[in-house]
Length: 425
Image (cartoon, rainbow, N blue to C red; front, side):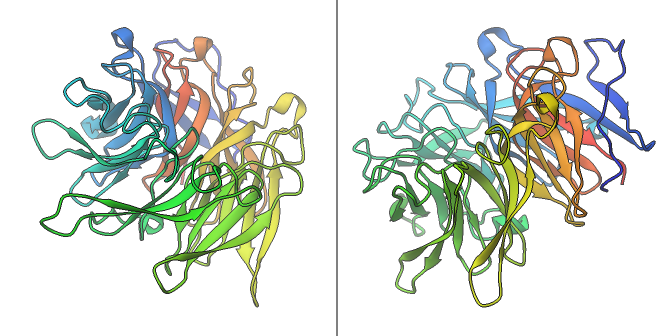
């Protein structure tokens, strides 16, 4: 898959009610895009509004899981599942849990701004930006019973000493996540906060499950960030096979390395010289980091795509792969969001929040291993943006040419969509 796709243009005359349509690329290859579900179609957006997260989660049965920051039965966000029916021809939306249920008033937090991880039993873990003690919470959604139960694993102290989970942060990581392994439920979870800590610039923390027979998770601040050290982190952490953690923020990409005594040493891998706001990262088996900058970059503060590769003898080599908004009116997209996805051939896929051919509503893009950048889909290709608007988060794949992602806005209910993009393979 790679390089044969030119800018995709939807043919006119399609019904606004169409959930599936095909697009013809210049080279003759056929690709297709369809909306699997539009959010905020229920009264008062009880099904969720404003989708968030670095990416969706997909289980072995093809079910998709994610979060909405607003909406839900109580207006404070929702955890949802999309279940494929009839071999994936249709998807059924199910709200697993609305945040701030009066039965447990916001104890597990509210208004999530990150996606979830899934364990081997099918339970989900995530973070919220509010609720708990005031600085957000880490929660577990236990899915095995007749209904999903939400419980707080940790609530961040309202004095900010542990950090505060804020916008654009909060995704959880664990050993093995980058290989596709499910969380085992007994090893530590790792996360970042976007404020608080010793320097009021955010923290990196470790959350350890209780020993059998004990009920409390424990949190440890591994590092308090400071100006010049990724001040105000964005997006996710990633972990390599040796247990090193990598993250990014405004102006810096950094590594935390276990020091052998239970702590971590901080290493600055790359500092921006042009104001980039580095976001979510992806890590390859050889240790190469690939990511995006939401802002900054070589053109119009529109962001960039880059890689940071380890070099023999130590250190990392930064390479700018693509600067967004190089085309007139930013029709190539601007302000990429979420972790990029890299396929087996080294081709990179992602989304942008803005730019594109349809009034700045974002695109889905591919950057091939050969260095070719292509727009695969322009959001808001249908009237009233019923196909979605404002790409948010990265893509995931089933390995058979089908990619899944989401938008923050648009759709039949204006609360965002979950979509599928299918490419020939």
